[in-house]
Length: 362
Image (tube, rainbow, N blue to C red; front, side, top):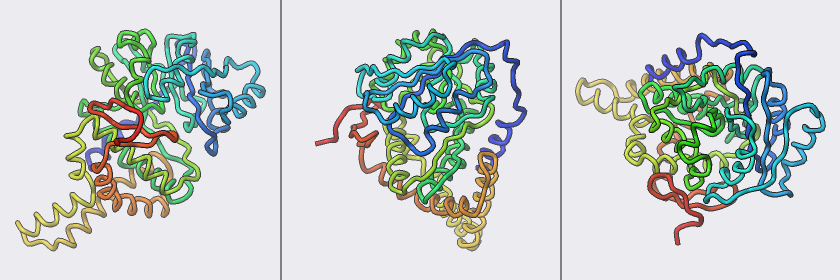
């Protein structure tokens, strides 16, 4: 845990930017579903990028999609921008995100592709901090996600998860040689993904981002992390939404890497603290309560340092961290108890290896 904190600090030091003239053009793909709070500002941030050449392709699956009005407002506001809206879904498999993206992916003018979710809000130098690292030996560049602008219990719990546990383990697993890719920010070359069968091959998996990274590594290319975190605008978020999201993410992890999932409790602060307190009491007679309290305090300090790297730490953040750490074992048990998830209003069954099937188990 302390090692992970130190590595996280090192990851985000020595940031640099490249001169715009040396950068390849980029096609940015933005799949949309629904209108979350802050969507207009999130999408608009991509019109303000300081980058010499890029296009933005927004994609939806229905012409009644409410996000269309938001996109149309931005297209009117920035008439000179190289941006368009696409509403031509395809059926490549049960993954709705891939079905949404396919036509935009095929229409993309540039070899360098960036897939970015709708809740990401970026700074003008985003591409300048990202594209230069797409060297010949690199297959995909992803990013650690910083949860910002949280509101409500679920929002603060989400920020706590992203800004501590998730950030630490994304950096740590990368250093250990087991990098993860997240779909919130995926930069790659279309010509490279073609060697894996293209984007459509990911349509049968729920974790298309993870499987893309797995396939890239089989090509002897690397998965890299962006030098600085990207911001996920959280906004108002209910406890139920937080629980459902992490139940889904957990079951995805379980379906892809069951053995790694089974040992996850060893890395919970509460569980490892209890195990350490009992062990030190038996071996040396130390007070279990004192040991557990010191353990939780040290863990909290390290997580607080990571949180401060990602967003401003506060008393609300501390309270959310305490609640989330207490919920972690209960969430793990809930994840273990089933293999179904709800995603964008539809039910799916998770099969071995991360494969996806529609409908719940009957």
